[in-house]
Amino acid sequence: LLLAALDLHKFDLAEEQFNMLFIRFPNSMRVRNLEGMKLEAQATSTGIPPEQRGQYLQDAMGIYDDIVAEDPCSVTARKRKVAALRMRGSEEALKEAVINMNEYLNIYPTDSDAWKELAELYLEQQQLENARKALEEVVMLQPVSYLVHLKLAEVLYSLDEYAVARKYYAQSLELNPRKNPRAALGMVLCTTAIEKGKKTKGDPTNTQLFDLSRQMVLDRYAALKPTDAGKETVFAVTTCVPY
Image (cartoon, rainbow, N blue to C red):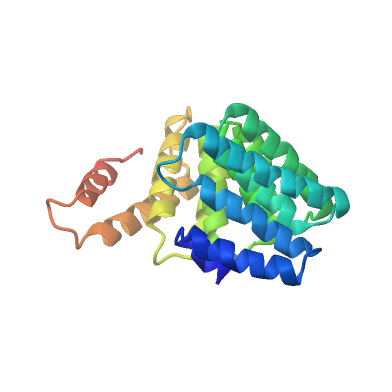
């Protein structure tokens, strides 16, 4: 009920529920985590001045730091502190969030969600190479997730590593060939970039992958009306013939 009240920004109800829990469990770390989450939620409410918002987040992080000092393996406190740092949004806060997430992953290296969070933090700071390494860890932990392969492929494409990106686009399409137009479009762009970068044309594998992914995009958007925005994508793919 307390968490639902926070989601709805019913802070009076949340405060009432928290007080009941605190009276009954005054030494509970779980209750203290809820107190930090309550402060985080208050920081997201509309109409409060920036300095008050910052104070809410600072108080929440203070609670999480106290919990971690008592229990360094506290999953909730460590993750919530990273969330609070991301909410602050400054460059210094994001750097501190990366440090805290890496400390957490030193303790829990098989937490795939934490690796995803770390990758997002790196992407927010345009650290593509570090994001790549984090996503490679996620792929090892979730090898059948087509979305993870797609995300890694997009990062590799941004790094101009088209040959490696093509493999992950292909794996994403193999895992989900029916409802994966983003990977299909990415494969079209990737194979086109590979073909344009070659001195000699005519790689049969690259050509085959281009044709397959191009057809996937065309099939996916074939039912759209001429006025739909997706038709622009279809036109771009239709006119994209790298060989």
